[in-house]
Length: 103
Image (spheres, rainbow, N blue to C red):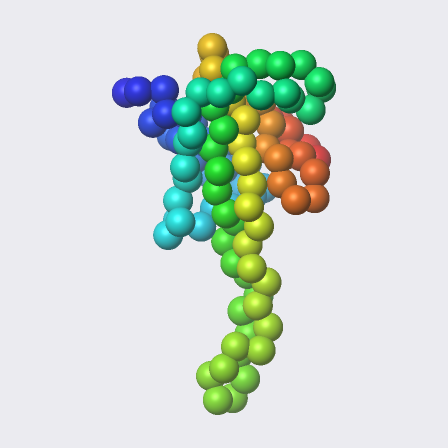
């Protein structure tokens, strides 16, 4: 299995086990090529970044079947160490999710 496929499988397992965040299965998970990035601690490191969108929620309909309330999913980015292929953190609009599931 190549590193990108391995990372995607790791993220799917992590999402299922922690049940803290979701991803839109239709859009899926997209792993980019290895890149050098400045992490949130200010250090530069080679990483793989997986982009995904959370599921859209709270879809409400009126009597005519028209959507009256809809919260679109947000884009998130999971950072993986390029050497160890371990999840470092997930960056989302409202902050970060740590590997242990904390915010």
